[in-house]
Image 1 (cartoon, rainbow, N blue to C red):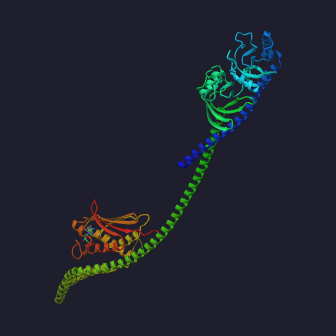
Image 2 (cartoon, rainbow, N blue to C red):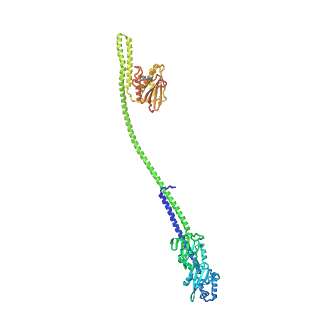
Image 3 (cartoon, rainbow, N blue to C red):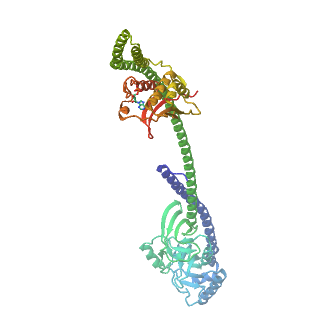
Length: 616
Ligand code: ADP
């Protein structure tokens, strides 16, 4: 079900449906009325013809009495006493043959001279009917027509009168009264109510029994007085039928409404409601024949057509709405696709912009990295300078130490050499040899001091190369082989399956190892079975070598000043306190570190950590 997006569209649809229904109703009604009109006209002609035929049958009859000599004699007063009886019998027979209600003859004064019903106690004979309009009309014009209700028996009928003339002029009037009941009865079976109203608008014939002797229009007082005089309707009530005009359509054709408030009627067709009224005057009479066609069927048909038209319009609207919704849906989809395309284009543009930005940032980064590298180089150079400067500062410190360290042996040398000279002069060769031996020891010691100073002063080549660490350890142990043997030391070592390789200077690394192992041997001096454990550990791209001895371990003071230059606990001449300082500097040059600590199970552990060389 399409969703209504706009109220105006819904309102337009509703208006369209309403208009379609209304127009179809009006058109249907108009067509239906046109149909009814054609049928009504046909009926009107038919009923008029049948009425004319019915009346025409008897039109000539009153005139024929002018041919009857007995009648004329009676009116002329020439037939004697028996004349009345003969005419009565004649009229009785004629009435019987003609099938009329009654036939009677009035003399010139309007008195009934003879009548067909002369035998009956309520016979007209002798009655004065000069007040009846048909009498006066016949006297004046030769013929008279009149519809009325009989004054004696109250029987409605149509009176046809004809003046009877003799040689002396008008002798009287012959009257026949015919019943139109038969005609009325035949009308009661027709499909639409039909009625005949006289010149006063009083219904004198009707297919609907209850409508008879009702009035189509209001009667004024003068007319009612005239009715009393002529006794035309024998003082009947003459109630209004309750016809209310709804609108004229054409001459003699209009829409009317007959109210249910009229006289109660029993009929085969509806007798109240809206009707199409078609009237025409009947030639030769002042009467009006009216056919009333009920509009119920027309209304029903028009309503059906209206409903159909409204449904069709609703279907069309629905179709229109569906098509519109579909069109809108397609438009939305198109818009969404365009928006998507737009978003895509935007995204692509942004990606391009970002890529350009990134490229620029990348270039900038590269520039910055270049800058950093240059800065680092500059820094390194500066650092190198600083290191050198630091070393110079240390040399300054050293000078004092050296002065102190060398002055003592130099003074001793001076004394010993002077003594040696004196002992030589005296010929004391043994003492001189002893002195010279001590001099040689002092020179050795001084040589060691200067040798270590040379090491300290030597600048790193800065050229690193992959060094197999186990191999470097082997070399260091080879260098210390004599000392190890002397001390009967045991070195526990193993090498990992993948021999660790670090980027460094092999000679200087061996120098560090010699220093660490040498310190370990020093710490265990005097022990019967000194033992050194060398253990490897590789993790996170770094390799660690733990050099553990089983000596006394590091004192608190030693831990605090371990890597400070000239810190030593060894007796003067054995240690300069430069070994660990130099070693730590070398290891730092390799990008590594050196730590000293006490092992939980005793002894000191020095850990040398170096970055592993990247595997090719
Ligand atoms: P030196 O060996 O000339 O004294 P070092 O810098 O090599 O200079 O050592 C400084 C001091 O650190 C040593 O004098 C010693 O007190 C202490 N030390 C170094 N190694 C050990 C060790 N393995 N066990 C105990 N003490 C040590």
